[in-house]
Image 1 (cartoon, one colour):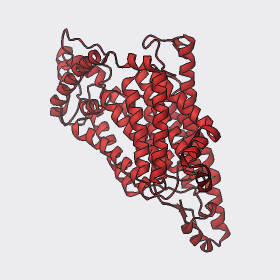
Image 2: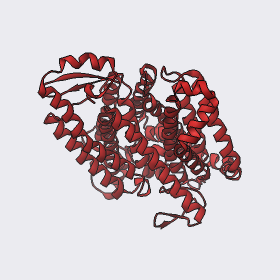
Image 3: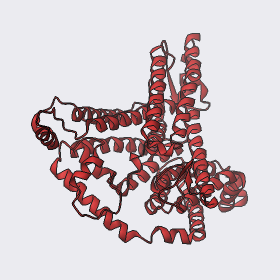
Length: 498
């Protein structure tokens, strides 16, 4: 994002007289031109990940991971050639990157045989005895699954890094946010269409679970609700931007309430319609956790903006009141569906508690080393009590934090969470320090709250499409959380402000 492209920026205009060499002006323009194809490729890839059943199948996430690797390679080649620079690496982002690298290294160690025998999973010794020979043991129960999990985690990291670079250009970042919101609307509208038509299918496959619930292109209703919740937050952020841009003259002429309603329902009716459609789809998914966490995510967005210097407190209160009225209205119109969502809370809670107890037992047996990243389904079957009644299929722990602790060990799982916390703090810093364009940092805060809470009771971040989307939004949010970005060309150094 060149300083020459930002009118009215004090810091940028102060640097303008220094950019007197034609080569330096060429570098600034060249940076924008080259980054556009990379941005288009990244956005297109991320927006398509929910389409093939949330990319839960190996062929889907494997294809997207390979394509992301190609985009990353293209970006790296262009960076080496000097067509664009590396930016967005603030102290908090660098700290998160170091922690992420530590977790990656630990996962590799879990899958390798070059570790002390006392670290190896006991099942390797039992297998060797049963086969009457010797086997090379490892920490991981299933090294193949551990390496698959590693590829997915590297994929998410690559998306975050590319989004971090893309987001340095404010126009690209805002376009990415808008496109994500509209594609979330498309997936929600598809889910509603299928539901109201009574087709009970996901794409070309007939549903075998969650008949009668809106799931979009996802198999699991809770995963769809979490994804739609991210879309709801993005649309809410765009609506807030519209409200912030109301001219003071209009507020003085018709009053603040009338100006807000006119702006939301009149000039930006399409965004309001998108908000209602996505929220209705979340309700009709009959996902209790998805509904509650989505509402809490929207609240987190508004609360975060209340700490911002860019949004007047009184304006935020009026917007919050307007959104509250819309939420209540949609709740009233969807009363039967909400009642259905919460009808079986007690029964399912007991089943999940049984899974949690088994997972805690797994953690207790390997609190430091873990059982191997990505091996939870296999390990759970070993620990599952004979005759136990787990009503919920236990391929997932329905608590990402507990499952990560069982797979990675408590230290590595805590490091992974801490890496995300640093990025969350980066977004909060952006909300507090930026004087304008705080929608993206606040969106990063809100989506982290949504998925962080939802991961306590489900496995949304273990769905590739959701994790990839979160990495994309968080990368854009972190990039736009800085009050200024350094751009370095082969022969120039320029400063860019908001």
